[in-house]
Image 1 (cartoon, helix red, strand yellow):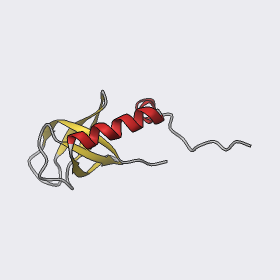
Image 2 (image 1 turned 180 degrees about the vertical axis):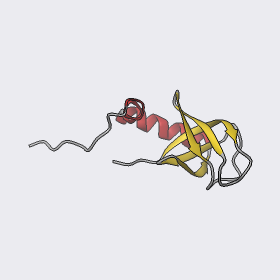
Image 3 (image 1 turned 90 degrees about the vertical axis):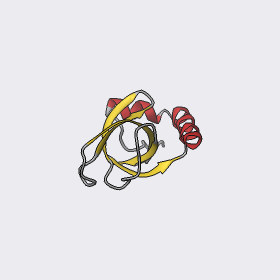
Length: 91
């Protein structure tokens, strides 16, 4: 399953709109993310990220709600260990 998840921008590097990248914090896991689609964001903003691209800016309260849902689903653990895979069928 592919998810777009929220993260907080910790730092930004690059001056060109297409090459700007941010270090984004996903509940304690830092990843480098392209900011090409969200040129208006700044350090401290929350963004929705999918496959390495920040897609939109997100309200902080909404980001925290989504983190709570993800924790319940144990999706954050999969983000860090790289063992995410297709759901298994029971049967």
